[in-house]
Length: 297
Image (tube, rainbow, N blue to C red; front, side, top):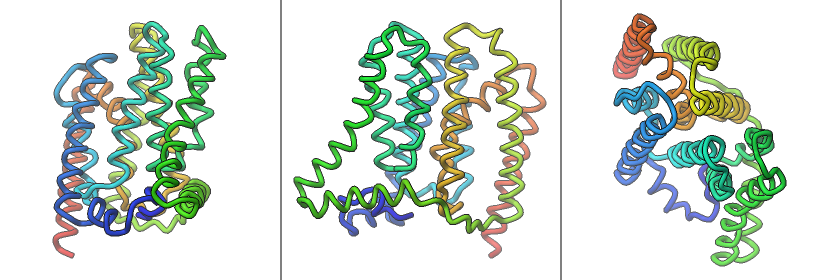
């Protein structure tokens, strides 16, 4: 990945140490994956049904399919920030509408965009998620934009303090290049990877339609949260599809945050035991086959 475009105020040596094939990178990756998995479990515990320890296992199971995930990347940071942004967004929508929750939600989302700039393009759509249900729409819009602009202003201030106008201009230029350059579409998928991707997409669609069909059976809080999770999943998938530069980068760390919640909603239902068994057997089999192929090569 072009880490300079993500963290332009970091020295090349620092970036190579943190995001390269180093022991520190491995440790940071494990720590962030565990924290993210536990956070997903906590989110599910607070707002959705299907309370079970298998949810964080499902997330880890999906992300480790990509071998690059064992080393730290900006996507590890983005995944955790996006998840907690979703938590505070749901908290603002489903309980007393404290504007502080809305500010924190957009602050975290904007902080994630510092590490993955293309997320900036979906800010307007994210703002629309809660505006219809907001009691004080003007204050909602104001706190949303305040949360959006605070992280980049802070990053710009750090660059200016450390390196003056030169580093600040470098930040602006690299941020713009990253958020405006479309993916090269030079994909390099193996047959096993294509099969796994199609299988996961098929199951994700089945799970999504299952959740949508059952919205009227859920409690209001559960229903609102499921809609928000599906919305986030669609937006992140679209951004990843448009701006992807290397399909071997661990985009799944970020994408599987909402997707794992949707899948778990379907797989944890007693009505879908056979479907869950098929899912785990097929995905496990494909993962084993892909590792055998890599070993043989």
